[in-house]
Length: 143
Image (cartoon, rainbow, N blue to C red; front, side, top):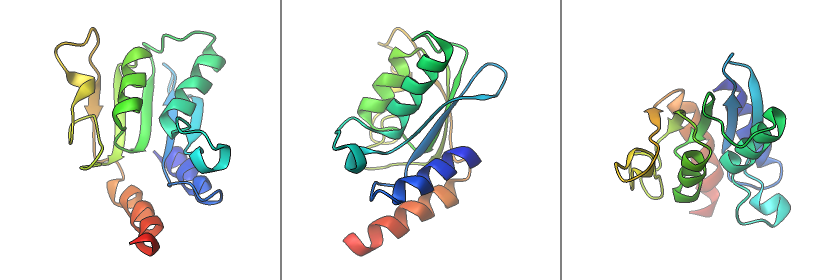
């Protein structure tokens, strides 16, 4: 989570919402990194999780990340939860919950829906206060 938080802080430099993600390989090494880059790239799908999953797939040379763990500072949205499922990631570690748009247990629970062909173990609340503080600081001037 420390590396994901570093990625989240780096997103601030481009005016992006401070969300960071990393993918850990089977040995626990970081194989993918991402941070929100929607503002930086003008790309609506440049979410931290999607970029980290793409980076991990490129590093490992395969799209199936069925022996990896996705670590992210904020509960993934519907799109990112879907990408996590499609990459066959078995474990998701998240910092802060997102009660408005989270899709891994709060607003929706896509990653554990019994209708899916894959389910994801969710470990929540890891360094949640730090993750939430970054978001509160970022959004405070906008409210």
